[in-house]
Length: 262
Image (cartoon, rainbow, N blue to C red):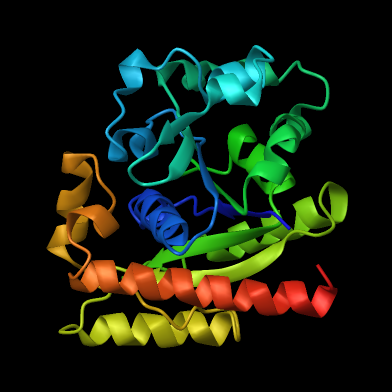
C-alpha cells in the first residue's frame, strides 16, 4: 500500500519542508520507494535537493494545470534514491487558475494515481496557508503529519487546522486523519520547550510522535548544500532524530497495514 502524507501547518517556519526532505531521505535509506511533491510556490523543498527552481520546465504546476504525465514531471536523485515533483515560481498562479476548474479540489489526487504502484511513500510538502493547493493535498492524502515548533505560539492555528481536516474528511476525503504531530526545534536548555510539548500532548492525546526534533545548526546548514541531513551530517543530533522518526513511522505503518490486511 502506498502511504500518502500531507505535511501541513499554516504557520510558517515550523519545519514542514525540513521534515519532508529529511523524513523522505531516511525512508529511502531504509529501503522505501519515496516520492516528494513540492506544493509550495517558494519551492524550498526543490531547492533543498539542489534543484534550481528557475530551471524547472516540468513540475507540479505542469502536472496540475497542463495535464502533463506524472513521469514527465518527476526528477530522480539516483544518489539518494529519491524522486521529487519539483515546484517553480509559476505555481503561484495556480491558485487563481484552479478556481474555475472542474473538480478543482481533487486534481492532485487524480494526477497522482498513475504513480501509486511505483512508490511506498508520497510526501506532500504544503505551503504555509490553508489554500486551494493545501486543500488539494488534503484530498489526495491518506493522513497528515503536522510539524509543530516548540515555541509559545505553537497552539495558535492548530485548532483551525484540525477543524479544516474534519471538514475535508466529512466532505471530500472520508479516510483523512492526523497521523501525528511532530514537535520540532526543541531546545533542551529551555523550560518552555518542555512546557509546549506537554501542552500539545494535552490537546492532542495519543497523536504526538515519540521522536522530537531538536534545534540543530546542521539541519539549518544542510539545505544550502542541496542535501538532506542523511547525506550532510547523519551523525548530528538532527540527523539521528530524523532517522528515528523514519523508523518510528515505518514501524507504525507496518503495524497498521498488517491490521488492515494490506
